[in-house]
Amino acid sequence: MERLQKLILLLFSLSLFNCQGQKSVLEKRPVFKVHKIENDMVIDGKMEEADWKKSEARTLDYFYQAATKNEHQKTVYRMLWDDENLYLFFECEDTHIVARETQRDGAPYFDDCAELFLIPAPKPLNVHIALEVSVTKIKNDVLFINNFDGDKNLAAKWYNPNYTVGVQIDGTVNDNTDTDTGWTMEFKIPFNVLWGLDRAYPIERGTKYMFLALRQDRNTLEGDKRSTTTIFPVENIELYDVHQPDMFGLLELVE
Ligand SMILES: [Ca+2]
Ligand SMILES: [Ca+2]
Ligand SMILES: [Ca+2]
Image 1 (spheres, rainbow, N blue to C red):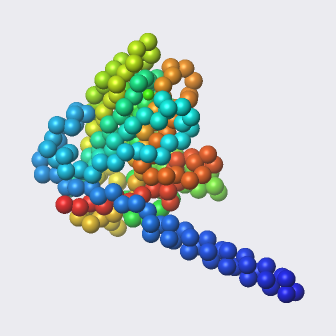
Image 2 (image 1 turned 60 degrees about the vertical axis):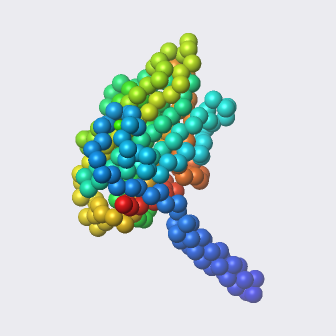
């Protein structure tokens, strides 16, 4: 009996520890400051606007399915906002620029691709928006629902919001006889892509949303092999892939 009591006490304290652990993990999520812009942006994949100079810049340092040095290529990520739009900029070093998908809502995430996952709330809900765009501007945009059916997730591909993407390529696409330098991608994402999901946390200074920025890096013409790099660490990625809202960080809209 005493042993049973001890076991129950141990299980209780373990579950308590887990709950507290989860909570403290959330409180410790990293925050990315998003500065407000003052001038119009030209969405061309060039960082010529003065506003980009005041943006926070972070490298995407967490690599997955990356074994070789060539699968650890550098990515710098930036973000800005105004009352109508969110702006993103990806700067990607890339020795082999490859993109095979040609259909919207196909699988550009197996190509050289930039991605944003966004929850219009400062907590990990079971719904997020995923915008995934290959270097040839092929879009896969989905409303992603975690645990839609038991532990099965659902990617609703009919979600086709309007957002603008500009790309610059320094190299040759789908030609591996030479060595490329890299590519850049600039996004203008109107806040109306949120479809009213932002009602509880409207767009204004101080608002925090959960997000994850990612890059897929494909370097071979055949097969589906590519490495993934993220702005925040994603634990258990082999088991649950990258769509884990409690692994997202926070963005904060500031002046
Ligand atoms: Ca620009
Ligand atoms: Ca879609
Ligand atoms: Ca590549």
